[in-house]
Amino acid sequence: MKYVIVNSGVGNVRSVANMLKRAKVAATISDNPAVIAGADAILLPGVGSYDSAMRKFKSAGIVDVLNEHALSKNTPILGICLGMQLLTNGSEEGDEPGFGWIPGQLKRIPKKSSEGVLVRVPHMGWNIIDKFQGHVLYENMGSEPRFYFDHSYCFVPEDDRFYCGSVDHGIKFAAGIRNGNIFGVQFHPEKSHRFGLALFENFVRFVNEQSILAKGT
Image (tube, rainbow, N blue to C red; front, side):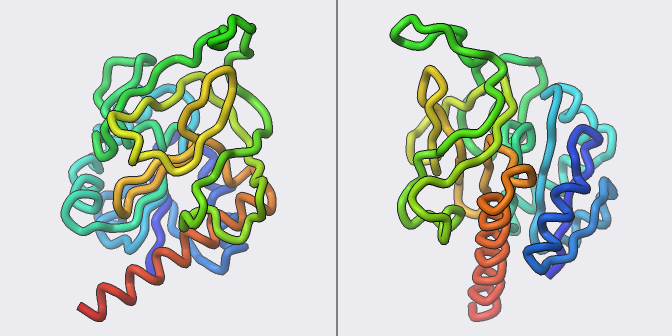
């Protein structure tokens, strides 16, 4: 199985590659459309500006190949932090449209909760997520999986069925999202120690299961 970590120039791709290595998977880091085209699974890490990342994808000529994987090939894709945000329609942070694979918008986290309590923005640090029981990403983690967050915008989906895990930081918002073979997590599993490793292992297991199913059809 060929795993490709897309190098958008705005993410700590080496940390993601190291975690995949611990999950017994070798990954290629690339922004070459030909390399990405041959992927069996794709990871989109990222931190920083929404518009800068999307412009990087466009300038590298990889938007079309990513759309083909997502919309035609049903390739397993995992977006991480900013990479998750790029799976959506767009963000209040900028003007560039996202990939639109998971319908919804990114909104800035309110500085006050619904009860009027001040909320720290950016949302930074460890949080227990409210996982969805039986969801493929959160298997073998126990009852209170903890992940590291660092972001100022949160995802508001068009349909709650796209949620896969939530977190409360003044308001409740998506810690993870999913649409078919496309997954996104707002937190940083590559910085989340044993819980992050378990998530990568679960993603690898999902990729392997999908490959077996595809060969059987």
